Length: 154
Image (tube, rainbow, N blue to C red; front, top):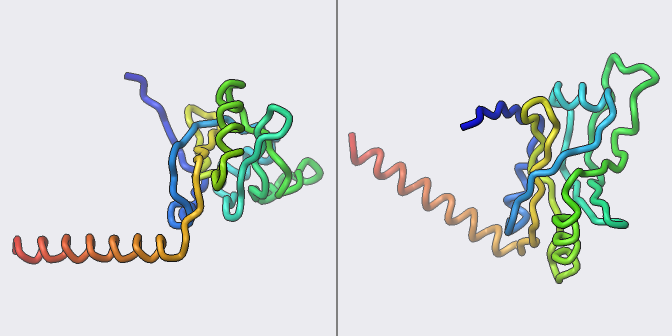
C-alpha cells in the first residue's frame, strides 16, 4: 500500500450544501510558479468557481488564487482561467454529461498529493431551497439523536 501525503490547500464547503454530488474526479491543475507558492500558503478560494469543457479541454473558471507576496512582476491574474489535466476519454464523458439538463462541474477542493497540485471535481446538480432545508432538518435530527444517546450512556 502506497503512502500518499495529502495536504489540503482549500475547500469549497458550501458546494455540498448547494449541490447534489453525483460523481467525483481527481484532476491535475496547470499552474504558474507563483500560483503554486500561494496555493501552498493556503491563499486560494473556490467560492463561485466552476469548470467547463471547451475545444476538448477542461478549464476551471473564477478560481481565485491570491498573488504571491514575494512574487513581484512574476505574479499572474488571480482569476485567470486554469486548465485541468484529465485523460481525453474522461473529458469527453464529462462533456456529454454536462450537456444533459442540470448537470454542472463544481470544484470541491484543491490539495497537494505527493507534491503535485490536484483538484477534486464533482459532477453535480443544483439543489432547490426545500432540498437545502430538508438537509438541515436531517442534520439537526441526527445531532439530537447522537446527543440523546450520549446522555443516556452517562
